[in-house]
Image (cartoon, rainbow, N blue to C red; front, side, top):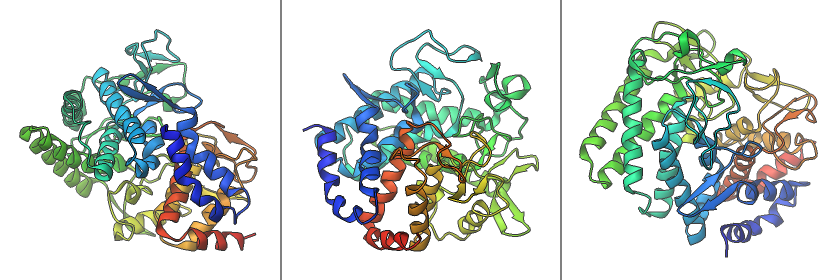
Length: 432
């Protein structure tokens, strides 16, 4: 049996429960299987995963697209598919660790006017901290679930060393070799200051040129991504020890500690309404960007990523800000309310953020409201979009966006595993 056959069989028991809500089984099944049905390209020795309507592989998206399959990695075809993706991600990092998206094979075609010109293996060279965190997170989650260590190859070890070295370099961005400029584009697609971005002061945190939305950072210390890096460096240290590299393990833990102290010292803001919360970005020179973005890592997603618990007081205060009127990218409309992004039209809400909201609370009423919104805003496409107009959901971006579909599948399956799905469905049905 193929991985697709196995997973299709394993989710079949949900049909009876999901059929209690109109179209839920149809949307869930389509979303849950979408990555395997449309984006996974297994090649000799590895697995290439396109993001959907763009036929390139993002390190972040490819991880997020398969995480919901890890619960089935006790089967050999699923495990092999994930191990192949881990292998491909490590190869890509060694090609260019500053890139965010890669081609399946070398191509001279470039969709943008970027300077410097990237390798033919690279689709886009926007440096984002989380691009290097997600492959470690995938490997860690796979290892936790299966105990398999076959992915701990020499190539994987070199990728870990490359990640740690790059995060260390970007603690002092003034000494970094990275530059990025794009011609004929919106300001959010290029870096100012000769391709270096806005000035920053050393803080112990590590610098990022772009957010997980692929939009340029306002300030170079992207706080949720730094917290994600802190966590994944500690996971990298465990892998380094298994690979027999005690020096790398020590360096990774030291760097994680420095980032943690940097966040504690430079990323907190005393908000007049919410109290002590985390900023989205800072520069270490007293400037803060108070917002959150729908893309993961986000402030809202910190418990989903495993960085903190759902009931962490700092997180709860920050969450209240993110889901309140003072987050400039929290939008409300006649048919939905949630977090959007400057990456998409003003006022548009992201299903990814709604799914994250549902997975970072234990409030069944909140989860029911999210389920209701998602099921009434797919515009008859029976899948999740990148974003949509909360007043007119038939207006949306990206009909084929596998990451959003995977997140919906994960949200629903988690409710099933937690034994709360039936109750959430019943509460959602009463909202109409």
